[in-house]
Image 1 (tube, rainbow, N blue to C red):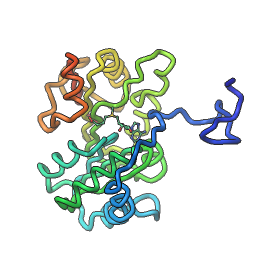
Image 2: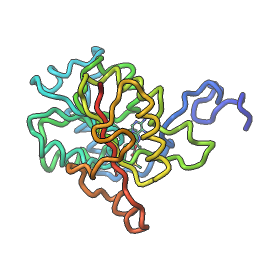
Image 3: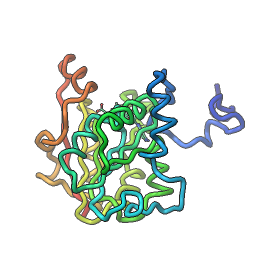
Image 4: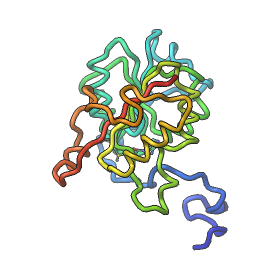
Length: 238
Ligand SMILES: C[S@@+](CC[C@H](N)C(=O)[O-])C[C@H]1O[C@@H](n2cnc3c(N)ncnc32)[C@H](O)[C@@H]1O
């Protein structure tokens, strides 16, 4: 299909006009429980439809430092972090319904009042709904590496996204990243070192020690079985 032809996902929208997404649209199969969780629990744990920009204090019912995890998968890391730092408010974002369904089921089994969940594209959420300078920390563990050169434009960590994050993060806010794709790890370091709003929390150009709060997720476990090394990065919003 040519660049100018219409897309099957968005009929009438030319491929060349579609925003570049950092994720592949996969529906995945929802279990009955996950479907119920999305129907019944998303209204409780999800973000309200409006007004925008979001009022975090009203959403959580308290004023507290705010952290966002982007690409939560099934939410193992988010739940661990939120348990470990109950004095923080936590928002987990992903586009993948079965993952968010799993996270909601886990929250039903073990309620965590300092957690909210968004089933949406984090780029749109940040651009359209998140107030400026409202995030004290951002976590992005194992973002899709898009290894083929022709897909590099879909990588989340690049200048336009970092510009957006820089606007939404508070000065001195922290950005934690991890990947098991070495070339993407170096790409991320280059992008962040280049960005005037971020400074390496360790040495310029250096990877960070393993983030102590990062649990071993299913995804990382699978990579480790294949001998993939994991690279952590830690940057500070200037
Ligand atoms: C490789 S998985 C890693 C999941 C999890 N962090 C882990 O370590 O197991 C990447 C996740 O990022 C999500 N993702 C990619 N782009 C996204 C975006 N723009 N907004 C929200 N989620 C996104 C994908 O749906 C997927 O669940």
